[in-house]
Length: 136
Image (cartoon, rainbow, N blue to C red; front, top):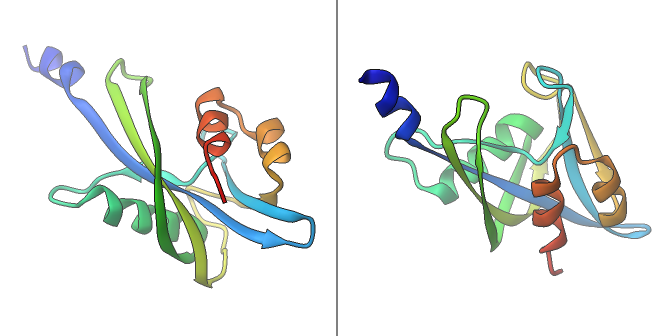
């Protein structure tokens, strides 16, 4: 019975599409997660009692070292995680205000790429959909 309840839970997460204006135009920040050997957007699960907005800002800072300002909310993504649970991720456009990346356990590399470069580098189609919805 406990297992069934676990599978029926919806996992709630939040993250950001961090962007800046670079020499060649808009650039989006992607993260490499060594545990999964994938390129993704910074995101993570909500802590108990935490709002999605607060979680998005916290996760981006934890994974990238960047403190960001929250912009417009982007379309959410829903999928089934590796454990068979429904996962809903809410994303916001974000711009960096301060900070610097330092490799950590979750993220060993970040890259600033053009939107087209993001589409080519991102591992998951759902992340490409999110970056494609960024209107700046």
